[in-house]
Image (cartoon, rainbow, N blue to C red; front, side, top):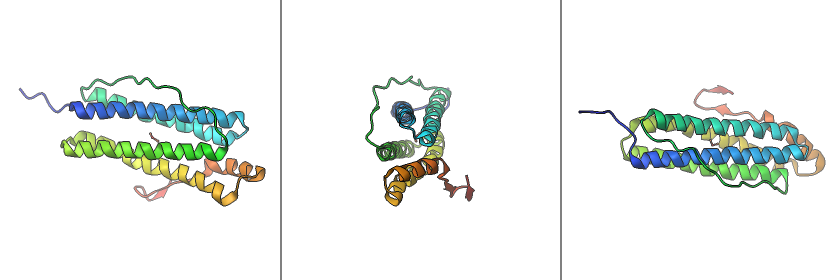
Length: 177
Ligand code: FEO
């Protein structure tokens, strides 16, 4: 009897690892947001709180996909994340490094799905490929602001004002988001 396509053990494991990575990413953004809030960078804090929410949504998207595909999604346990930072610049460099790592992990899942001819997972993970273009772009632009404007008190004030206004032109939609 045919029972339909389900996730292979390798794909299920990779998706569960990604669930964990998105949860870790959410926790990292939350800690970064708290640091910004405590240091008077309220706009950056607001931006980072929103990012933390988004990462949790990413986690839940994958979690539901694993469940919907007949797999066993694992509620992730994550350890301590960094809470102390030396500067606002370090926060965004930290965010960029984290996003680059996420992009690499997403790409690996896509490669695995293709190797296994798992078309549903290939199709599902494409959304994250596109999402990572935006996420990397925004934090990279944020890091560049420090090179452009410097890091004296006035520059930091202006960078904090600028952070939430960084916009992304989505090449898939051809319009400003
Ligand atoms: Fe969901 Fe920014 O990784």
